[in-house]
Length: 72
Image (cartoon, rainbow, N blue to C red; front, side, top):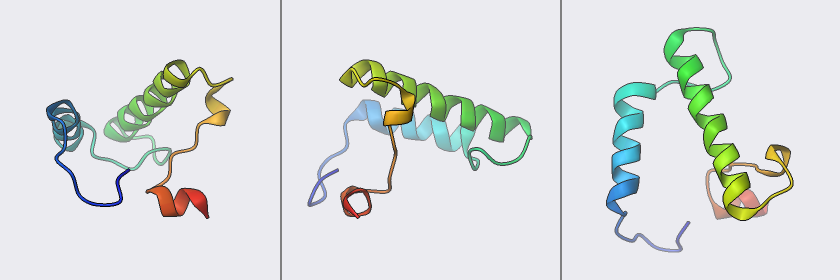
């Protein structure tokens, strides 16, 4: 999260592009294939964050829309 707009790294653009082309669905809702795949990918990222920051577990990772939302 940044206080101002900055350039987005290519790896992030590629990941976002993949999401919009293959997994663009609401997570934790519905049982349709794309929604299930989106939920699976979302939870995989949560596990990756746990490993990256050495958190105790996935329950310690909460995703928010940005810093302001996270602080409130």
